[in-house]
Structures are given as structure tokens and as C-alpha cells.
Length: 212
Image (cartoon, rainbow, N blue to C red; front, side):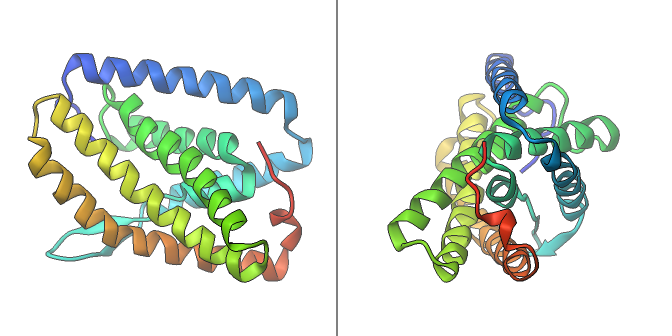
């Protein structure tokens, strides 16, 4: 889902660079006022875990592959805004060090995987959790749903960006991106549920507080 340089026109990547920079500034200001010192090690561990997990690809279909994004997992454990900052940090490092995703389109990638993938995905998780009822099993079902939607909606956003830029017609980009990422979303959901199941057993306190 990492968009390379040259795939978005200037008006599109400039717009999303501004949106993402504004989002990061807002998130950092909110986090700075409310974060607890004891949460800082967990933020570092989560950033390292997501960075490492995103380096591992799994086969999907037709010779394509996907990788874990981790937006909803970070949002559940750290809060949507903190999860967004963690995803943004990972994407920035990947861009500058590994050239994974273009520099000019960094804002678009952060918007798709950070704002949609973590912030919106985490709020969808919370919505499903309240809808289904607050217990451990429903928490895992909600986490799977939030993780799946985070991948598919981020892919749809990417397709729209490509279409607006004139790179690929929406009628081509939308079903291709949404279709393959619907399968990737299953892997995202499974990994998210497995990690949360383990945390429920060993550190349930990490899941008890609604965070920023």
C-alpha cells in the first residue's frame, strides 16, 4: 500500500502532506498533555514491533503478497492518536532509510495507514465493541473487524488518490485495491487478534483503559 514517488500529481500529494502534517501536529499536542511516563516504554516497544512486523510479507493470491500494518493494534493498546504517531514514525523511517514509499507522497501514505489505518480503525473497533457488548470475546471480534476495515478503507483511499491524480481510473483501481486488500485484511485481523489474545492472558491491564 506504500505509494511510490510519481504516482500522485502535485495537487494531490501536497494536499495530503498538509493534512498529515496537521494531523501529526494535533496528535502530538494532545499526547503531550495527557501521556503518562509509564506509557513511554510501551510506545517504543509497539513502534519496534510494528516496524519489524511490516518487514515480513505473507502470500495472498495471484502471486501478490501483503504485510501487517498494525494500526488498530497500536490504537487499541496506546490510543488512536498515539497509534497514529507510532504509525507515522514507522512510515517516516521506512521512507527515508529503506525507500519504502516515496518522499513526496509520504503524507498520502501517512494519511492512509496512520489516519485511516490507526485512528479510524481504532474508533471502528470501539464502535463494534460497544455494539456487541463489553467482554473478552467481543473485544477480539471487534478487533478483527476494526483491523479488517482499516486495511480495506486505507486501500480505498489509496485508489481514490491514484484516480484523482489521473494515474489509474477509479473503475480499475477501486476493485483491484479493495479486492486484494480484503484478503490482506484477513491476515491483519488474525495477527491483531493473536497478539491481543496473548496480551489478555499476560497483561490484561493494558487493555482496560481508553487512551488518547
